[in-house]
Image (tube, rainbow, N blue to C red; front, side, top):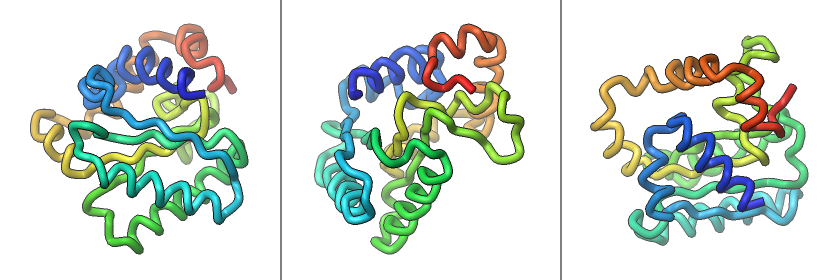
Length: 177
């Protein structure tokens, strides 16, 4: 599972430059990968809190960011979105929104009000349901060097459209319709 995620991160996210911030942390091996071993509420909460603490207890030079993978119980995109919203609430309750943000990835990721077969969904598709813990401070540092951060999303869609459906689905076979 971790090897599949590392491959996706290197070949798709970094390889296609879908996230211009990812290359340095991947190259320096500063990504922490954690796999949830359960899916009940108590386990999910304990896992999230433990991983959040792990990230915040390490210096950014050691652990810059974390990818939390959920192989069981969140196969449904709607169930995944409920857990993501719950984790965002937990982050707010802990008053950590200024320190950590969450990014979401799922094999069946689908943006609201976008046709189901649109390639844009692949910008947020990953081999497993995944929640990315991002340090706000590190993101702010990087964003200072990005001229048009709001353009990243559209650039990613343009990249996938240039590649075409066949190539995108070959790179991300778990994300096919």
